[in-house]
Image (cartoon, rainbow, N blue to C red; front, top):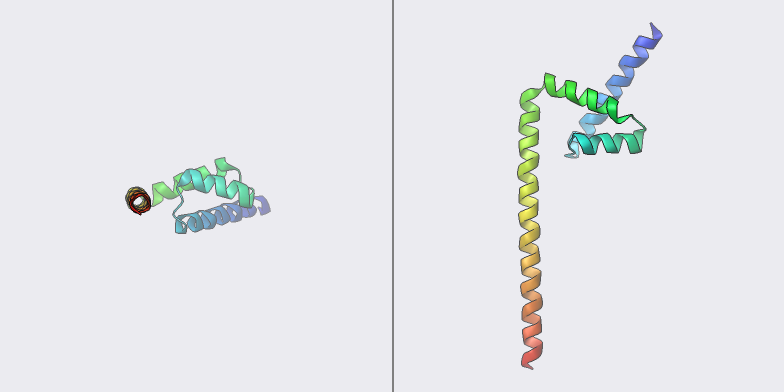
Amino acid sequence: MGDSSSSASYIRMVHHLIEKCICFNLNKEECMEALQKHANINPVITSTVWKELEKENKEFFETYNKDREERNIEAETMRRIQKMLEEAAASKSSDDDDGC
């Protein structure tokens, strides 16, 4: 009985750590990597618990994954805009230097 109890406790701990990963906006693969690195949890265990959570909370994960995609697109757009602004500023600076 102790073995079953410790297994359930371990799964609850992995569940809790996955929730922490979700708070940090990690996807399943990133979570598996983080838990392996920082908590020494076998990625197969993390993946299995994650899949069960997805089954139990289908709507949440659909929304979560969609929101992650949108945030990634927004972040990429912001990076591109920043790069364009930096290039424009560098070009203007270069033009100003030539005009003196």
